[in-house]
Length: 87
Image 1: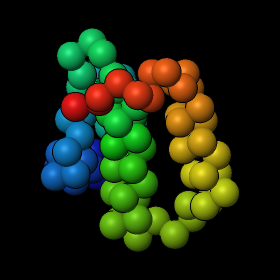
Image 2: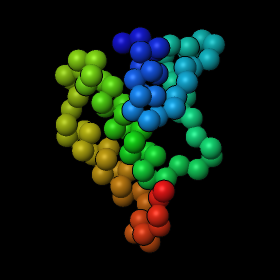
Image 3: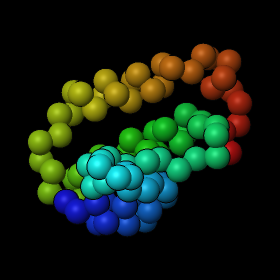
């Protein structure tokens, strides 16, 4: 998948990313944020990456590994933080 296609697809899914710079251009992407990420932001990012891969025909996604990723993101926040409105 081309970096341009990936960036446009992620934008359509509500995630702002940019291409890497210099020697890593086309190999990595940068995530746009305003300095504070909520749980919802991280889950949207991960879901967007998985969706972009699936849309592009990625059938090598390990469902068990993805489940572990989502569980890790959800367990990162303390229970009292989960009560805060995440906008």
